[in-house]
Length: 254
Image (cartoon, rainbow, N blue to C red; front, side, top):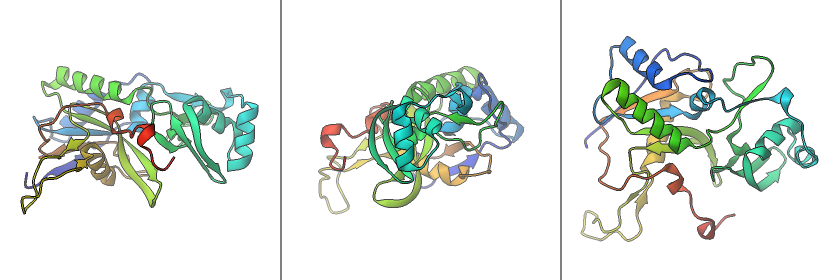
């Protein structure tokens, strides 16, 4: 591989529960004179997947528990928002003023279980979006549907913006994928001088998600779908994005 190209699917509409994301992608690509090609990789913002799957909660429908009220006092957030986070979490990892880090139900360690209110139309009151219930299954279903519509079944990555424990700022990461090896184990390969790599594992799913995030943006850009063209995937076993998660017994920081 000597280079790759990334470009957004333009004029993508606002998404509502039940929308056919694959059909919308195909239609928008056609309108801009493009079509999926063999070897293309699609990266989708988590938010549109969650919205299409109806992973939405109206804040007025939430009744906060005593635990939610207690944590809300600690972190300084609205108790009903905290309850939505708790309902989609396995455990609380850290709680302090302005920060609530949890293990989300799919196993991701992230702030607020990925629960977010940005770019959600306030239809009938303030609404929060949760992460997809199974983002790997969402990616696989989307890839299959695209194959039915176009004859091209692209690898699909579902991207979310996560903070990092030791670095400032969020970065795009893969929380779901299909059709690619999320982690490339390079043990046994050799460097320029013949040294055999002993422990190198490259998280290509996260690197591709981060690259796509630069085009997606974080606010009002309206570019939730990115096509990556020209990247050669390594010959390695395909796996779900959950395989990226470090097992608890190997987690040195929790």
